[in-house]
Image 1 (cartoon, rainbow, N blue to C red):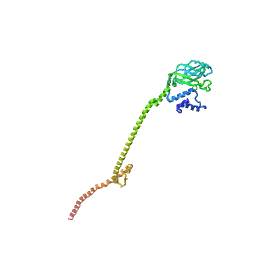
Image 2: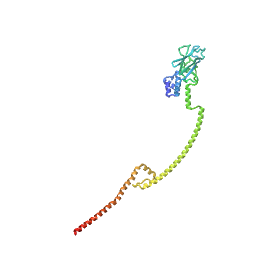
Image 3: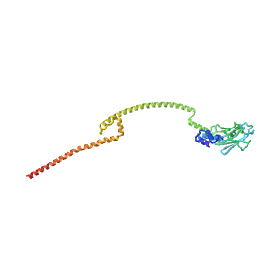
Length: 337
């Protein structure tokens, strides 16, 4: 389980590396996972991680062949097997009789239907009917080419015979199936490869040639466009420069009369660019300065309009006073008389 977690976490790209590091950290001799079936299922999980969980197909197990039956001391071994799916026993084979140690024993499984996780246990009647001699697990989703070959180091319990006292180094078991030409996992791998690469090599080569041609054409078009854009850009820049120079000269001409009519007699900059900057930075101050003389001019014009009114009033009084003086003179004359 720990090795499967290490594979699942993605820290290790392969199951072999995960099991190796686990053995180095967990044990002194570096052998962490020693049971072959467990190692096989860690490899299964690597494929599940990379390509997804497959469906478990139902396939037929035809026979089990034990090659080089030199696995026990008796001269005539008599092996048989039992097949389990989960905890349920599905099939028990007959005893395969052999005449010598070097012969192969074939167990007829009668095309028993198996699905998912399967356990096979091998016994030998010449030794002990109840004591298992070897066993192993496999999953039907990973059976390919209608066969499964397990060598000595891939079979549970047999792997522990390192000195070859019970089993020869050439000892192996071959399982033959039906309806398992291509495994489900292999089909998933092929689909993933097609999804990555697109199509087979021939079609890919044709596409690559077309893409190269299209790429060269696109590059030529892009280069032409870039040249045109460069030319247009230079022309536009020249036009802008000309227009900007003309506009600046016109603005300089407009600014000159304003400089002559400055109310406070302050000197303004000669260049048009400097005047533009000042006008942008201090528009409010100039507006106030232009408004101030207009307010001063209004009171000067008002007394001019009021002066004729003041001159007219004394004339009227003079006219009114004249008859009064005459009347006084006349009164004085009458008294003298």
